[in-house]
Length: 343
Length: 291
Image (cartoon, rainbow over the protein chains, first blue to last red):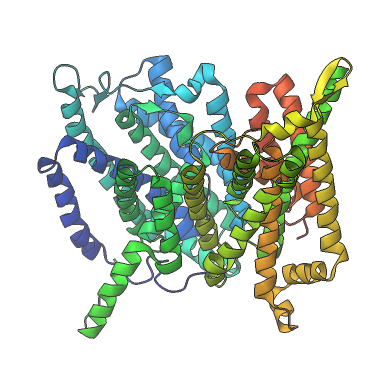
């Protein structure tokens, strides 16, 4: 399908990747000291969507499967946390993560088992159909899920790090945003590192082999279905974690987050950044979040603005932001005789 | 008894609309291998344009002229299709199919807002047509006569589509292109023209669905997004690319939906998606789809 600019096509050393990643992490750690809490909140959303898109791209970029149903796993994580607040009175973020991941894992295992038998457009439609089953449940069983009113998840009663950090008392919102940013950043860094290890492991290489040539991969003795299934579960778990992290920040979960246009937005993020590179979806998610926020704030017709960006992207910039930037860097590197390969 | 008959008629009414949307989706996929996420929005556009045109003319013209305005929506959507296909889709045919899918998603976002911009946020209706036909009695209950007209148009459209695809020369070209694009091109067919017309035809049918539904149900924002998913369920059950499949799928979905609203309203939609998922598992190409 894609022979140029594949993720992980060139030799990538751990040291070099760390050297590239470290300054970024340092900048992300310092930035909240320089910006106000609204901007910090925006960046937190961006990081959370980054985790979701990172998980999504294990399927699209590395396994060659386009899921149009990732809103389901995001929503599962979000609703799992909300149910724990509403029905169990749980206030610990770590318990949300634990419970949410268990539920997401169970459902993605079942959905994935069904879906990975198919590829291409059938895979897309099947993931879409299954995600919409969950959407109707969230939408129609209003006595459980609150219907379109959703479920509130207040940050005031929530604690981080097993109760070490709470948000009662004055200026709680500012303190919440400040602390939660670093909480999300920590998990974000962990997720990126974990995904990096996964895609550069023999397992990740096998996924790429399946993506590039299924028949040959089968001849090599790779259990295609099982590999795809595992990739599906990992992908769903990352996106589910993003959903869990998103809930307290948003304060509310409604069925809209499970509805299929949100799946489209996750695809959008990955394509915006460039799904052929490891960092593309992360960059895409953060940029998309700013793009959407400012489009919504500045025009009533923000949907059209996003649509136009997407159309231009598809027509003129198919490798996304990271693809375009790295091609520029590569060209410059080639001119000066340097090596300048993919990040 | 009366309720059963009315629900039966409702199901057929609903199936006629759903068939028109799904047939267009299926035709476009069958010929061009494009899954058009903006297809539901084309249906909505047809509804808006017809409602707008009838609303403008309602005061000054007599009712027969208003009925002639009904297909305006369908024609407008077909014209839009004739512009969109060469401008946006054509450059992408040599790329992986994911790109066109994404492009149609972008198109959906744009068209939703274009409609909001042109027609405003308020629902538009063409109820004057429905009122003019009155109603007929069903065992003491009343049923709108207009709904019968919709059923008739749906049936006629199905017949015309079938005759067009299986009994005309262009139909043969259409089917040849859908089976082997490169071979058709090698034999001297103008594939670009075939694609353009197939896309416009698919758009026309979807627009027609919207145009005839709008006297009975107001055009509202978001109707396209909802309709798309139901049309997907129809074509998945019936088989992507199959007209017969779209027909059977539309009937099945409508009857399950009507029964669902009557007996199990909470899980009515979930049941439909589950049926689609099960069909896809047992027969990935749908009940009538060819491999």
